View 1: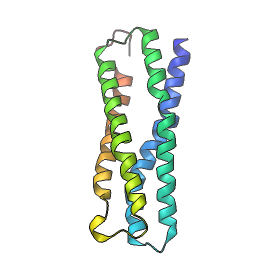
View 2: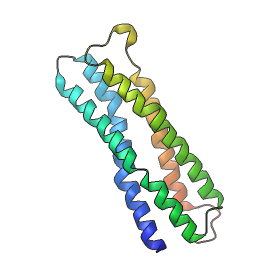
View 3: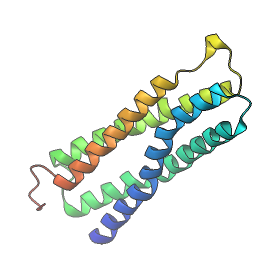
View 4: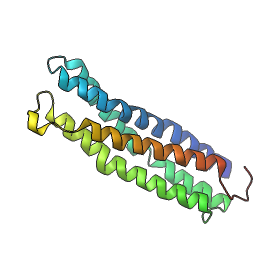
Amino acid sequence: MTKLLLSLHVLAAIIAIGPVTVAASMFPATARRAFATPTDTHHLATARTLHRICRVYAMIGLAVPVFGLATAAGLGVLTDMWLTISIALTGVAAGILALVILPGQSRILAAMPRPAAQSLPSTAQLAMFTGTFNLLWAVVTVLMIVRPGSTTGA
């Protein structure tokens, strides 16, 4: 059963988190292009699509920690430090996505296609938070592979 849960955890991470990291990374540059060329609706449509990908796959991504916790319980590693740190970093990444990235994308889309110059949302700040989100997932991935201090083998 543990192998099945681990397989579902890894598949959920690949299928859900991968698209969010890519779409969220592409969004700020696409939004800047949409602001720069308000008559070209292609960039606006692309930004909307990227935001939808982020929203939908964020919801699907909830399966990742569910399967991960079930796997960890099956392996008896719930109290291992590498897992505790991974859970904490996953929580921070989820918070950044839910509280900063998705609302930031929504605000930027609401300001399109012709924002007032003084109310132009910051795509640079959104890009910074997206980079942080992606870096957190990279660290969690490495921790899941390396498992420092693990007694269950590497």
